[in-house]
Image 1: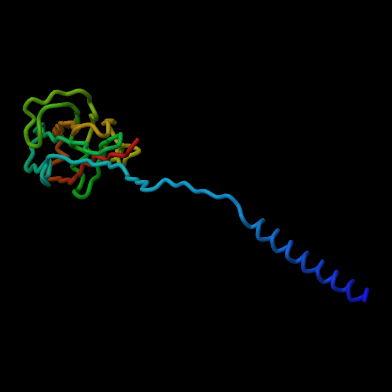
Image 2: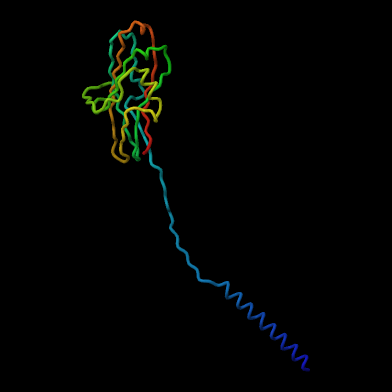
Length: 190
């Protein structure tokens, strides 16, 4: 009978050990917990917006220039973006047979005047003076652009008027030549 009692004691001890182990495992899986969150985070990108007042028209359409003829035109460029930016002017030739070598170009920046009407223009800076070929050959992209202007983002429309003066040199070699050029203002945020 001692063997049976001993067996019962061993079985009871084993069952007790299993029961206690179950309680320990179950208790150790419990833990305090809590969470907090921050919802509805929103993001928006700023803008760099540059417009001009040319209504899609060319700044110059000039035919039959004679030596020393000069043409003056203005255009107003407006920055409407929300980010601080830097604006430069550059150009490109897109056709013709060399008249750009004989056209003197002066570009000034200032206030007053508008597209097709330079009345009231007041210059604040000389942006370029040389030939059209020199301008388009030197100022070809943002990195080499002329006349850095730095409008502040978020301000009401910030504008700048540019006055272009083109004069045909008194050189017989210019006779009958043509050229086509474009002018580009580019803004990049600071």
